Length: 68
Image 1 (cartoon, one colour):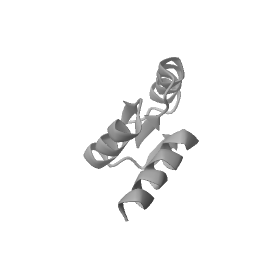
Image 2 (cartoon, rainbow, N blue to C red):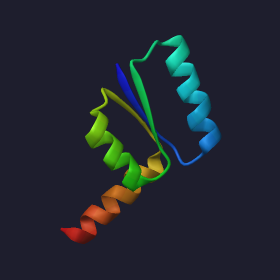
Image 3 (cartoon, one colour):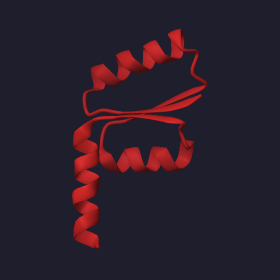
């Protein structure tokens, strides 16, 4: 299972990543601290699960609406 953790707080990403790698035996755990990195990591790793901070989703939707 591939997982992407998209959270702005480095300590939370690290702790959650550690847990997922060790307790769930995840194949790959990618991390992103901002929206742009999240989108790049999602494209590169094609995760089955994305743990997403709501602020990232809101930022993406606002920027998409401005473009469209």
